[in-house]
Amino acid sequence: MISAYTGTHIREVERRLLEASADTDMGAVLMQRAAYGLANTVIRELQGRGLRPYGSSVTVLAGKGNNGGDGLYAAALLARRGLRTTAVLTAGQAHPAGLEAFRAAGGRVTSLAGADARELAAEAARADAVIDAVLGTGARGGLRGAAAVLFEELQRLQRQRLELRCTRHGLVVACDIPSGVDADTGEAHGPVLAADVTVSFGAAKAGLLADPGADFCGRLRIIPIGIEDGLAAPELRRLEDGDLDALLPHPGRRSHKYSRGVLGVVAGSARYPGAAVLACRGALAAGAGMVRYVGPPEVADLVRQSCPEVVCGTNVVDAHVQAWLLGPGLDDGAQEQLDRVREAAASGLPTVADAGALPALPRELTPRTVLTPHAGELSALLSRYGDAPARSGVENATLAAVRQAAGLTGATVLLKGATTLVAAPSGAVFSQAEASPWMATAGSGDVLAGVLGSLLAQLADDTGTFSARGIAAPDRWAAVAAMAASLHGRAGTLASNGGPLTASAISEALPQIMAQR
Image (cartoon, rainbow, N blue to C red; front, side, top):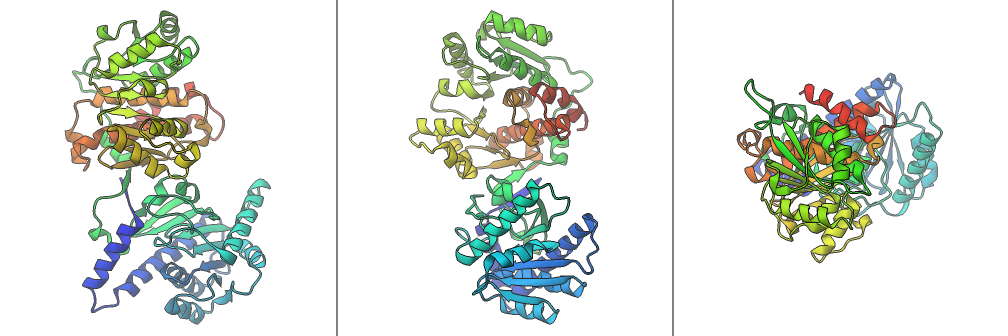
């Protein structure tokens, strides 16, 4: 499991460590460890591109603070390994000891002050690697003045190469965090140069695992520097292979369809019947022992044709289930379906509430109700509670928005997106990002809802397994939702294989993903 922390917390841990080590220059020790990890990452990445490090060119964009010092020390190490190194001092000054070490190693120094920012950007773009070491975790806001112009031009050149499908473009490595990304919130203050890899010191920063900050992070590499024992509860967590292996349910020798979880589904309408089919397919593929569909006969007929395993009916009260999935494909005018949603939601069972079900829910909810909005739906949901950010406001501050929604509703909230965030009312947050961009297709969310409903039914009474992974009982619903997002993303990526796919293909790939666990 990846644990991510705010930059504010990590700086406080560093401060306490420095105070406790007043008799040694611990600040210099931490910086050297960070620089060593950063330099080794650059070498490894260049080798991965088929380049010989000796003779390769590296430009470090160095700010005046400790982030710039990390970059300059790393560039000094690279210079000693035979790389041609240039430092662009974006503030006209730099970390004194780092700059001295860089010069002593034979590095070339130029200053942005009084220079043509666009010419320096063009020169940096020709380098084999660029290290972004301008703004660190303590920065608020983005780049300004000539530094902003420098990064804007680098952005333009980067986009131009991508549009021209250049087979070779310069490596971009962010030092701790891409300049302009808020380490605490993930908000991005442009211009921000997208990194191929971000080298994060001590621990992952929360802003790297939440959109829009994650857009600029690239691959994440975490370098231990000796502060890790002082870290407290993480700001957010990301489930990995080992977590899925431990948390996913596996049937025993004497399991039967009822013990493996029965999911009730209220979904679909005359206008959107396919949503019910896709939700049921997702639930079946994710291992539910039985799926009971409740809805209008014409939709039930389509469900039966596509999923003969599903038991269909028209009354919520007759469906004996362990969890409910409510909402995919509901039409505003389908009053009978909305009444079924309200009746199922009143059962108190673990519930997934998707799309059309959201307006029909009571105002006060519990963590065992998992809401699954996209950004537009979350904006509408927040407006019910007196806050009405535009969709863009949610997209530009996803971590704050999902946490706010969970706090206001009392429910667990899964915010769908390139990075899916799941927040518990306690403030615990999970972040998953295994999905392919090709999964932005009609019906993909219906399959996700089915997967989540299936897992809720199977894990409704399981608390011990989550506790063993350090997940508090009230937060286990958020962990289940994160598991669903991870499985859904992995299945979509497998089904896509780098190209277009349909929502049905996601459900078809799920059993293979589950079998790997």
